[in-house]
Image (cartoon, rainbow, N blue to C red; front, side, top):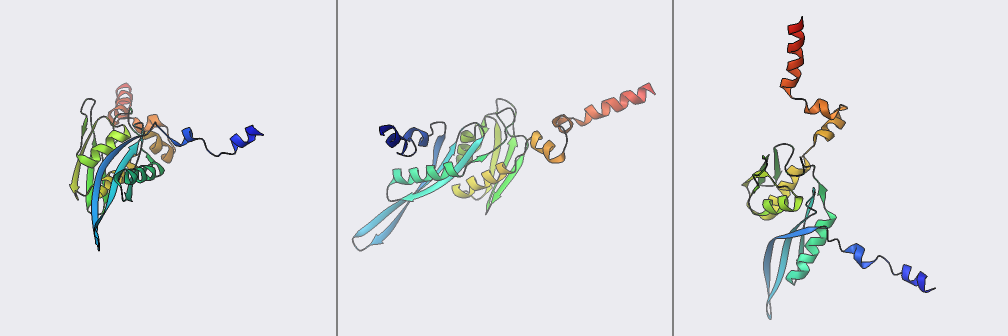
Length: 193
């Protein structure tokens, strides 16, 4: 009987807490409302969460206290995660541009050792995503909410050679074949003839 009661308690606490996710607080905004007795303060938090292996998400939370706003934002970020294909687990597969509202970002692949060259909120997204080498520039809105949304818009458009091959019904080797590789066999055939 006691065993059955233990099973009915519901989900275990250790399943809810996911230590594999890292989070980064990007911005906190304090707003005040003037009331009869004085001022009431509220806080809005913007948080980016990722597993540093290709998954990332962002969330925003509002509350009367900062820790509660951060907790709400972190929970929302974990619910809204996206998966991004990475080349060699360190950089993007191809250059990409993302937009949201007046925010526009340009993201470019980079060779090994370049590091993350990106500002503010974009840097937080790349670090939580697990990207090690990328060059990025924000053009337009400096609002952190719009910058993060524009960055995620660009990252959702990112596609790997495997995804392109599957969409076209070809093999990955055919997609990755370089133009000079294709020209070499044709030149050899012409020389033999």
